[in-house]
Amino acid sequence: AQRVTQPEKLLSVFKGAPVELKCNYSYSGSPELFWYVQYSRQRLQLLLRHISRESIKGFTADLNKGETSFHLKKPFAQEEDSAMYYCALSGGFTGRRALTFGSGTRLQVQP
Amino acid sequence: EAGVAQSPRYKIIEKRQSVAFWCNPISGHATLYWYQQILGQGPKLLIQFQNNGVVDDSQLPKDRFSAERLKGVDSTLKIQPAKLEDSAVYLCASSPRGGGITDTQYFGPGTRLTVL
Image (tube, rainbow over all chains, first blue to last red; front, side, top):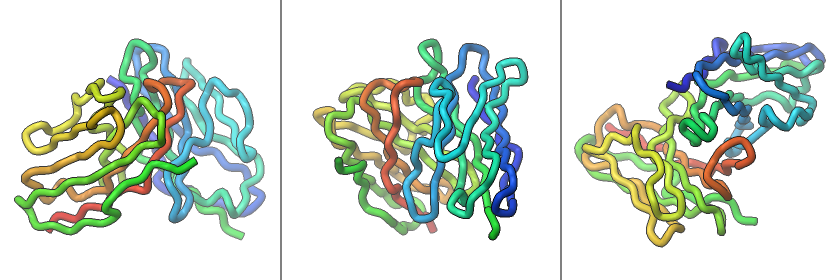
C-alpha cells in the first residue's frame, strides 16, 4: 500500500528563517515523489518532483530512501511562500500511477 | 492554454439526494482523475481514466458513486444517494500521459459539496 505522512499541520516561521516541511512515505517499490502547493484562492499545482533535482522558487527536496523521507526545504522563507503544501507519491510502473497525497502542512511566514 | 474547468463550483444538497459534477480537462490530455478532498485531509483518488477507459477505480464507493468519460474528453461524477460524509471538495485533474514521474497533473478549481 502507498502512504504519505506529513506530521505537521501547521508550520509558522518568520521571514528569512529556514523552512523544512517534513514528509515520510511508505511504499515497497521505487516511489516517485512530488510536492504540490496551493496558494490562497488558487488551484493545487506542482511545485517540484524528485527527479528534477532543481530548485523551484528556492525550494529543494531530496529523496532519502533509507529514511523513506522527502522533506521540502528553503533556506530563507518569504511571505509569498505562505500556502498549503502537500507531499504526494506515485507508485511508478508497478504501482498506482495516480497520486497518493499526505494530509498537508500549512506554512505561515510572518513578517 | 485554458486550464481544467469544473462546474458547479458549489453545491448544497440534502442527504439521500443526487448530485452530478462536470469536468472539462485540458485539450489533448489523455488522462483524467477525480479526487475527493475532505476538510483537513489531502486529496484522495476516486477514479482515473485514460482516454475513455477506467485505469483505477479501486477507491470509488461504487454503491453510490459513478463516473464516466464520454468520448475521452469531458467527464461527469455522480453521487446517488448522497450521505453526510460525502461533504468534501471534488477535484478534477488531467495530465498529458498516463501518470508517473514525468507526467504533470493539472488541477481544476474544485466543486465544494455540502450535504445537509
